[in-house]
Image 1 (cartoon, rainbow, N blue to C red):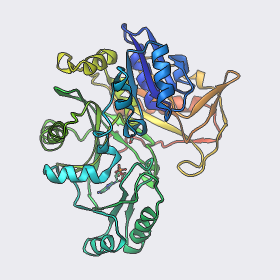
Image 2 (image 1 turned 180 degrees about the horizontal axis):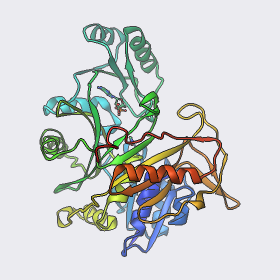
Image 3 (image 1 turned 180 degrees about the vertical axis):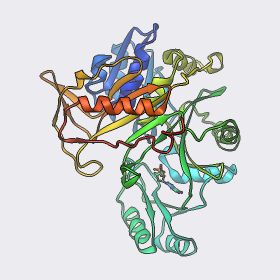
Image 4 (image 1 turned 60 degrees about the horizontal axis):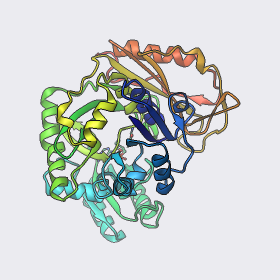
Length: 422
Ligand code: AMP
Ligand code: GLY
């Protein structure tokens, strides 16, 4: 079969890595891809906002299934567009993509279906937002309603800070929406929980824990994710049962009732508070960097899973995982998540020996004259798997030492909550 992967991050590189292992794969293309996907797939440099160009290439290359990595094309309706042209795509349609694309939609769906989530209000005018603010405790969480590239959430410790954030959003800081969501602050530990779904059923697709803060010890501004490990040490049968019954199943049922059954990967960002799961957010795609650790642990042929999903026959496959712990440490360009250095050469990547337990997934990289350069904030994902999490982390850190990049930095403490427990 011929597959196309849309995107250019570590997530997409790890998806290509796993697809390439399938004995059913004939052709693999990545749009636009990065220096890592180039070694596994044919990179085709098209702007992923340009659906017409994507369709043209998909027809020329006889692609059977298209996998959409990032949220933006999904929210903008790429699935509806390609389906109409008879192309099979893995991902939710434009309506179902509101689960991530509009926090107000997601929160209203939770309220209607008694899905546990932080108490909240959605506001379009400043005065009512301030009224809500004054009747709630701090810290309070201020969120932009629409997509904001990971920059739309602020945890505010006082009213003044919250007022400023509300003003910024209402004055149009984020193009996607001027609505503000205000939320009670939830205490606890975060868990990323994944499922894959077709029109008839859904299946567990792994758990992980991301590290969103830029600094060691979880300090500093939020990022897209500085590293992750899988499986999460928080998950047990009792908690998983609650997540499925109280959160995942009511959501999928409601999407069906609304006439838009959810298909594709669904990523629930959860806060676990005293053993109870609360939904913080839905993502309508795999996580990045969570995907990188999940692809190391996935035993079943990914292509087979995706093929069955697009035929609504997911129930036929038993999805299996390696019991090992996997970890990924993200090597970033100095300055990230603010303004960061670009076009800086990264040397000696080849010195890291890669195998089924050790991989480097590229994110913001490109190749010029056989040399690798950085182009993004998150640049490489140094990923390892071992029976113990500590062993996997030590291996990733050892591999990082072999790479020479003076303009890079990373967190040495990924997995700190779990490293001595598993
Ligand atoms: P989001 O973009 O919604 O994932 O939010 C980014 C991060 O902000 C989450 O991963 C949490 O760490 C934090 N966060 C969001 N909402 C809440 C909340 N209601 N209580 C506590 N932390 C939150
Ligand atoms: N790792 C966070 C995300 O993919 O949204």
